Image (tube, rainbow, N blue to C red; front, side, top):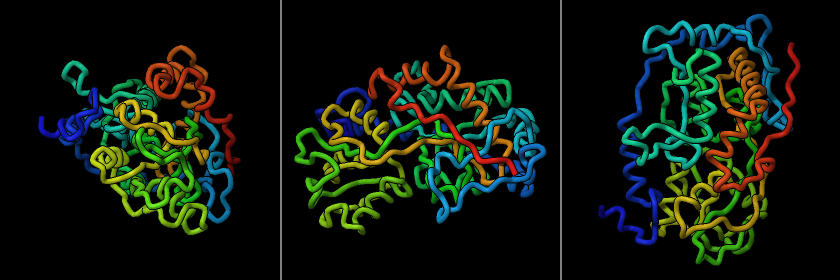
Length: 346
């Protein structure tokens, strides 16, 4: 109860005390999983069941990273075969997610004592599991910090990451991405009483929090080096999980947070004392991240995304209305990614 008093003005489950409860639940629910794929399976090989691997773009050659993905296919290949070959209780899709991002991937402590994962990303995971394994609940969720998303894929700890992960050229060197499933942009979150007005000179002398390994930090660092961000802005505060920035803001250890506007809007809904400041200053797209050579899994997820967006009753639009319309508005077209474009098969 003492933790709840750290911020008397907070309501709902968005206060520091509630965050502690969620984090405690996170530890209780996180499961360790031994590697189940051989080194050959992890490399993917001829993973799309008959076509050779197509490399996604190298950073120095990359433009429009959201278009650097493989064409959809419903065919199985070596990666999907390995997932299906898991026996008994281990026959599940292993997915890295967030469990602290309100309305995206979070454990709701008010959900009938079960604290099951809920949110927009979680709905997509269930849809992928339904398609690949025939059971939407055939999923082992693994809580992955922001700065561990790529290592978790490369080390084979998960089959994929579905965790508000932006597709960009640098990450395409390390992992493969699906087509985009959501459009957003970087934005400022700060106390309502703050003199910060947006991504401008009002950040002079302010301490800005970002997550380690995030596109937000990369943007701030690049802009400061290019003199496009005021030099006196302090961008040194980074944390393993993006939600930790909200806690730092609540405790007065940061003046502002930079993160995706979609996440920032949800955090503003958690804490009525903060608000978005200014307009988004980037355009970014979320994608499902997988091992670099898992071609068949990439193609399968892309086919699932095509079907998911076309399913008006139980697909993308229904999930948006359920989880995000309250924070991002009824007009979902601002968040819809463009029509996907794919790399050619080799």
